[in-house]
View 1 (cartoon, each protein chain N blue to C red):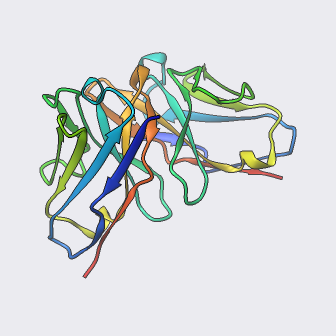
View 2: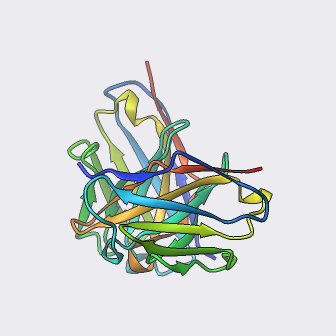
Length: 110
Length: 118
């Protein structure tokens, strides 16, 4: 049973920088898992932020960036704004044709 | 403009069956794999199933394999999810999601709520 790990919650100050991570309970995340990131605000469908580890989806501000940091995928938000408060989810693609989402990170900007 | 519109959700008793639909428009439907992703109330996202553009390949999460069947009608640009043997833990919003490049999900529908309860 593959488990994808994310910080349950994180807090950042307005204007600050925060890095959310996406790991595996067993093993390392690499580009071959095609990590992607989504944000979701209450009552709304998720929206794509980053795909293929580090490619921003169309219309996503360059304040959002993705990378592989050590053995995890990472989403970095620079110059955090109040409306960045959301739930952030990563998902990893498994070679078996399946996907596994992380549990999500609730980001608070205060 | 890509649009994915889910329908068919509702209240169903445990053990019952339900078929969800997702009407797609704005892209070459038969070219792309489409998935169902669900979200239980107050919980995170869970990938449920994916079907290839041709419909020839299907994939399922362990939690639904053997109970759910994904299918598509490319002539109607519509995706389906037949759900049998429903359980309380299947209660969730079900999103229809288009597969993008590099194994990503690039467009999401607004979802349809399935509630399994007696």
